[in-house]
Image (cartoon, rainbow, N blue to C red):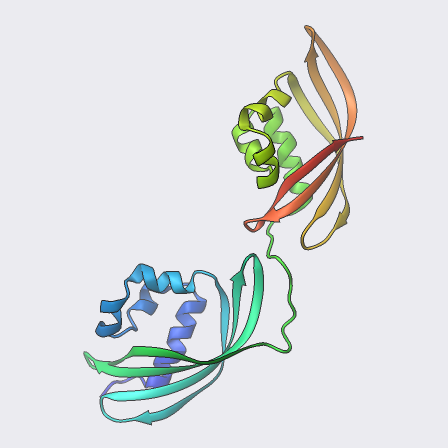
Length: 231
């Protein structure tokens, strides 16, 4: 007789998904289910899962070798850069293998948007001001490949890496005096920076204080520079 109940196996299934422990989660699948789906397939199903919280688990039927369990969970998933929340009901068929219960089939019974879950908008890590500071630091270090990656896909489509390098060919150094956020929302930020710029012009070193205004947009979970205007 298995020492762990079918309901506890389902709870562990969700806990392992929440912990991103996909190897251990895959091991809860039956040999039949593993023969149909690889470990990479299993991880692929769950790669956009933010978290999952169990609401209820109930056993619908059970005999010595087979059991049906129904669960309701609150699930949050990353879809096109936006976290979407839903309440999901799933039905699990479990079988006994090697003295333990294993998940043999999972069927989605119902999925509805969570009525109390706000939409937080795009998930973006980092701070727009830090991106601007890093932009100047990479220019000063002449690390143009990394600096180019801070540009948005729109800006990179309009300007090649060679064009980007050419903008700073005569740049000696940049010293940031101030960086401040003018406006910020989930899908755009405007940042103003004041810097002391040293450039090589006709063999002469020229120093000036300049003000740049940046428009940044979220892409792939981080802020990217989409437009730069010198004031």
